Length: 432
Picture (cartoon, helix red, strand yellow):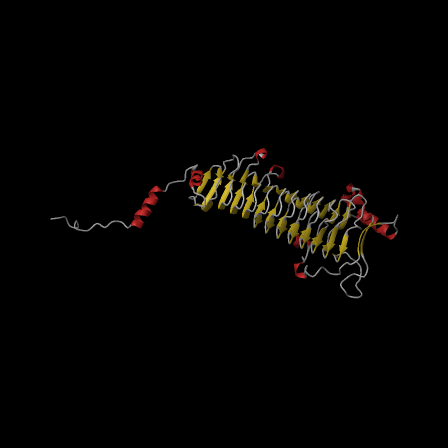
């Protein structure tokens, strides 16, 4: 007789169960160097989804794959070279963390180097790298939701967050940049920089010989300079928050020999100099237009480096700037265009109630502006000594005061689009 129970029929495991067991047996810890092998083995257009883990290697992608780190993938450069080099077109990188590049400025070691067209980089975190992204001769790429934190280094030891070189028609959207040096665009045109947050850097955004770019809906705060254009024409700045660029050279928006700019509906708040113009526009046939901006709580609202022409200021609101307009070199701003701006220190009346002051808004060069010609006197600006001297000079002028600027159509209230609910209750609220 057979032993009790031996007559049972043995049924095979289902295929799904065997497959799961086999997968568990084959799955082991991720070893160093396997990520590059996976990338090299992938065909064009393939999706590569590596297992979770930290891959300590420098990666080169030279064909159009989709590299998706959704399982929790960290690529660590180990302190050597550039972490990921993307030298192809039509690829996608997403859901990755790139960290620990080399530290050689001469080699521009970065978290990501891009040289190609029509690539997409999104949902990527770059941390503890010298440069964030280095983009060279690359067109029609999209960089979206990239977080860049290059590390808590002194400003002079940091690399750029994003460096764009001879690259056109790219989009930089919804990125978060902190504690880097510059976001710099060289010799590049028709790029869109939109909905980014940039803080604690040197130049928030810096254009060099870069024309026809658009900057809109960004928040740039606590940098040495918010946005600066050098030899860059036809730049559009629209609906940006440019906040708290302090220090001796702190500038909200600056121009150096740049023409054809359109600066619309920006909040330029809490800077040493709100707007800084160094012979701009350079081309007199292409004026710069400033319209609908709130220029508030700055040390100086607008600084002209010299007596120039070709800038038109329309429908702006100048609010609680320590000095509204400054012109260096004993020049004036009489040749600039001023039309329909609101000046909170305007002391005129509006008897016909048309919303426009009955007398021009004028700024004269009294003793309170002595510091403009004698920079060391700025130490006393706002103090009793200059205030007393200014009072005496206004009461009985020692000489004919110089007229710095005149606007014939000052508004009694801020323009309609700069609404009451948008206005701060105090300087502290606006500077937060």
